[in-house]
Image (cartoon, rainbow, N blue to C red):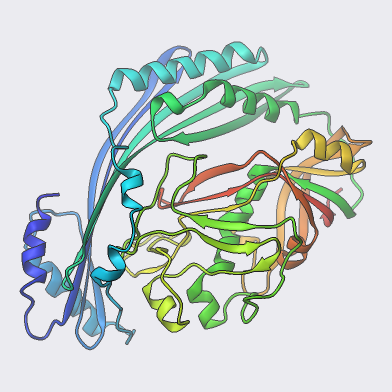
Length: 455
């Protein structure tokens, strides 16, 4: 990122009408190898550097470029001029060196961006595909891919902040189509780590087998309120939207159902939710955010009590709190280049428990095991907490699978769901989300009751 030295000179010599400026450069180098039937069937290599600039006078404007040869003075001026014509009259807060350097977190990512040989990526993908195909006789097709992302980020501003980190993430995914009870069914699972060696193929094979075991004979269903276990991937899907409940910006503007409830109990004692820059369950790490604020662990819910919020510089200022390193740009789905700075998670997850899904199913007795869910983004209302999520699952009788049901909908309110949690499983799943800019996680969740509709 040598080109940033030109930006550094520019932000240290701003014209009189521009009072502050900041530059965040992010480079993403990605190498993907896909294997099927022992052959490489897909390769993809990319190298993109994104430059985000914001400049302030009476208000703040934003600019974006991928042209590293573009004159920094012109890009900064473009950001400032974009602010002049903007309908928004806000003026962003920029980080100070005191806040930006008040952490040793960046050291935890140091040395993770080692060079990974192309041949090692191919070998791991070949091994993974072969193991899956050998372990599951009913498989018709199997596809395994290994993707290695090298991510580098640097934030500089006119106040003297200059922070940098780089990391590797190795992402492995398996997709299969298998013949189950005369039908062709699909299954997929994935995992991330900071190195090729940390990817455990046996774990992925086990996950595929568990998914396929849930594809059992279908049957009828009577709508009603049941004891329910949500699989960890269903929990992850819910967290992909539900993390917004803990956004400092949404809490401040009152657009979350939790408005005004900080310090109150919003769930059972079995519920704890944490946002953290590092976790051993994933290769991702977020030592600082796009404003240069160091990431810190924030306990959002502690045994049912709503104890914390995720903050960027703006929301922390509004609520008289400390910034938590949660400045980001991509909250949900967007078709535009995201330049405005908002609040996003780092690695936000529900704390796992100690028991397996099998143990929880046995104790549940009769109920429903929800194994898959869909259309999460349009199914949860953060303002009210209400949800109606399409899904599929298995009817459980005496702690054992009885029959499957494909057209189900789980309905209710997130706060009621939180209060009905009896325990969480030991199978925490953490997955990447939206342009790989943050992660969410969940274990399996056992609920005392939940409305399940279907037929």
